[in-house]
Length: 128
Image (cartoon, rainbow, N blue to C red; front, side, top):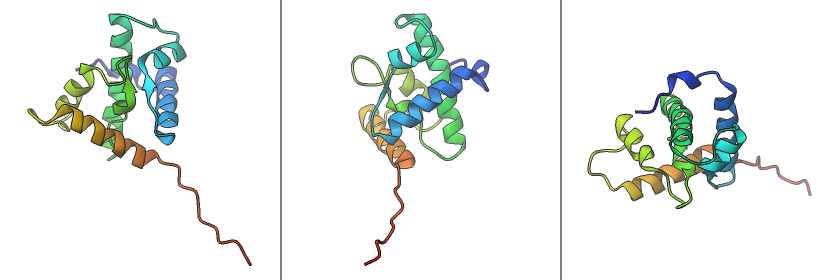
């Protein structure tokens, strides 16, 4: 379970959240390195992983409490997939069942994030 309490109401939370919202609105992904760089954190290593895990863990926890999907689904590493911490946190939060297909869960969660944050353009009828 990531240490999430320290990130509540911090600049790092807001910066990371804005990166995730932007990625979600464009049906994209955010990388661990992008988040680390935006927060002036190390770009590699266990310390970077701990920092990012904590802040994106809190974001996902807060999103679930608001009835939205886990935003950390769209945070990926160099492999193009989330780290093992994503799946462990999903189990801890009760959204990934033990034995459930992780890849299918991840893809489904990404789609839910994209749907939640899609940009809806209002329809306006053009007068003839």
